[in-house]
Length: 83
Image (cartoon, rainbow, N blue to C red):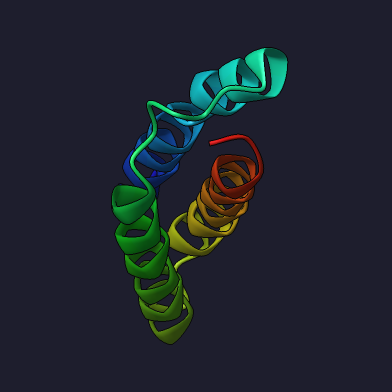
């Protein structure tokens, strides 16, 4: 077995870390305590990680950053709507 499984575990854990925040905002409809600037910078960084993953052809990087970007953009949209 290659060390690629490390990437999949890391990608899964770091991506899942955003699910509770997204669910909390969806349930409460309150995003006032979320930093807009942080999520803008974070989403931009995730775009670059995704591009880097595509460049390397690294599926753990590609998949995790696609999901993380979707979650971050959802949180940003909720912030703009409810924050």
